[in-house]
Length: 251
Image 1 (spheres, one colour):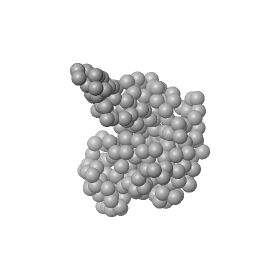
Image 2 (cartoon, helix red, strand yellow):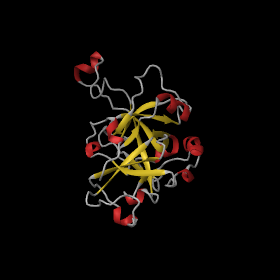
Image 3 (cartoon, one colour):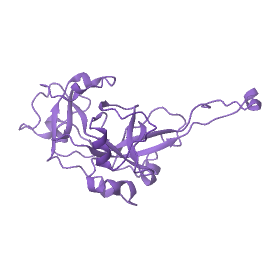
Image 4 (cartoon, helix red, strand yellow):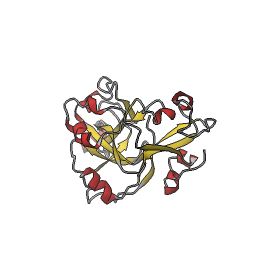
């Protein structure tokens, strides 16, 4: 799965890399060392591919009764079948910029990534030692995502109906959310977890946004240029967001 990631590249480099701009009306871009579900984070949607938009991580289907229980990941293998994702897969795709993501392994698995042990020996769900996965040069990349727009229902009743007052979300506007697609891991990530985020080849990012059938974009990204290294357990707290989180530590 992908439950935390980083995006601390300079704004100018980010805009140049994706040929998109942050709107002047929005708050300035701030580096993120521990992007977490429920936060508003920059994405590039197929609706406005030349602009970064801040959406909340945790997809709420348009037909949901309420805005609870956002879905942070979607399996690439079944995304076109699941009711929660099917409509978004057809017409609301996005790029989720990042320059790394975190995975966890059990603390007793204390041997270094890259040793002689098999991938299955290091695989773990919900472990305690966080690892950061990134390119050797920390360059930004795009994860495949889907986005949705959910609008609260509004009802009128009692005196409010006569006075024009609204109940149930009168002051709330549409909620725009996103999810990150996951797939089978490459050899590197398989030592950490049995799933990984779909990292798109740079030349296929626009294809993911616009193709009628983008399934071929959703392959595991080769691990040749990636590295995985242990980081501080301080990343376990989503309220902690500081540069020290991406520094290597002894596991």
